[in-house]
Length: 148
Ligand code: HEM
Image 1 (tube, protein in one colour):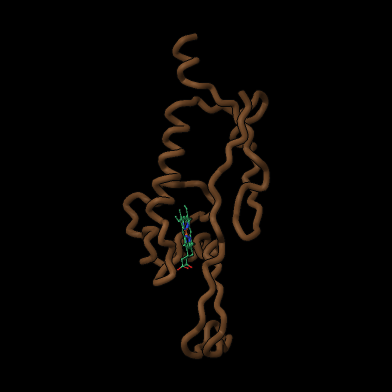
Image 2: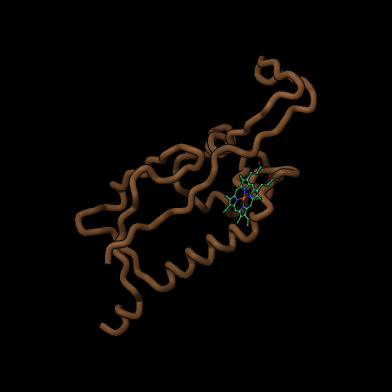
């Protein structure tokens, strides 16, 4: 069975803020009451904070005090401060449960002739970030594997 796996995507931009007072950032004067839009996507890929930021290496979060709860500004997938996502816990639980169930019940393989190393991992940017090219997979229910 061929399946299209819809990988969770995230919004790159946080909810707009208004600057309470004027300030200067990198030589740019920001007047008070400016509308500020934080782009969290490049912050999470800033090589000043992350080693090999484009590499899929989830182990980077092991033994790392940086978390997703808005306390570390180099990683703010749920934003930070008073406008931080109130659905973060249920959002994470939903993603984890779905992924765990999907992996528990199915064995996933690439269609014949495709190599994992050759997958194009390009992203598509808009109001959300997602894969540019859909991931086509062959799913084998474990029940079928056991009975065959
Ligand atoms: C993995 C899933 C989710 C991600 C990555 C996510 C991410 C975000 C981000 C980045 C913001 C902007 C925070 C800021 O500007 O500081 C936000 C706001 C918000 N999120 Fe989520 N979210 C997720 C799931 C959910 C769920 C499940 C709900 C509701 C059940 C939810 C409800 C909201 C609401 C109401 C806001 C606006 C908060 C405000 O304006 O004060 N989110 N979310």
